[in-house]
Image (cartoon, rainbow, N blue to C red; front, top):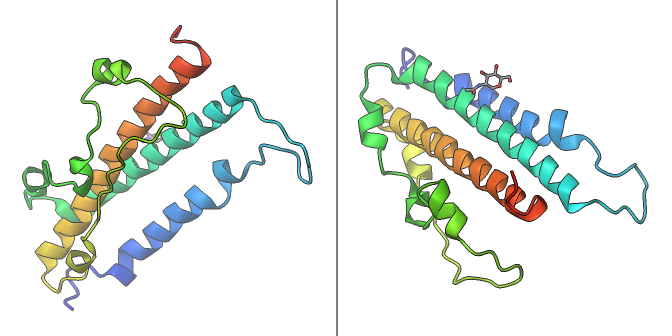
Length: 169
Ligand SMILES: *[C@@H]1O[C@H](CO)[C@@H](O)[C@H](O)[C@H]1NC(C)=O
C-alpha cells in the first residue's frame, strides 16, 4: 500500500480505539448509577432519561468530532460530500423528518411494530485497495454515524420531554 495515502493501522485505528475507549471505558459511561454492591437499586425513569440524554449527546459530539477530523485530514478536495448524500444504509428505516413529525408519533410501550432491520454491507469497501474508494467508504460511514447519532439525540430528548415532563418543556 502506498505511503502518501492512509492506512488503517497507521492512523484511523488509534482514533477508533480512542473513541471506543471514551464511549465504553472511563468517563461518562462508567459512572455507576447505583452504589457498588447495591442489591435493590431503584432508578427513576427521570434519572434514566437524564443519563441516556447525556450519553447520546456525548456520542453525537464524538461522532461529529470524528467526522470533522477525518474530513479535514483525508477528504479535502475529493468531493465526497455530494456522493454521501442519501447513501446511508440506515436511510431505509423510516424515521420522522422533523420535530413536528416526531411529535405525531404515538408511543405504545410493549407493542412491537413490524420490525425492519437495516443491514450494513460496507465492510469490503473499507478494505479496498483503491485509496479513493476506501477513503470514501470511511467518510460515508462517519457521515452516517454523525447523522444517525444526531437523530437519536434529538428523538431521545423529545421522548424524555413527553414521558418525564408530559410535554411541558
Ligand atoms: C464537542 O464538545 C466539546 C466540549 O463540550 C466542544 O468544545 C466541541 O465544540 C464539541 N464538538 C462538536 C463538533 O460539537
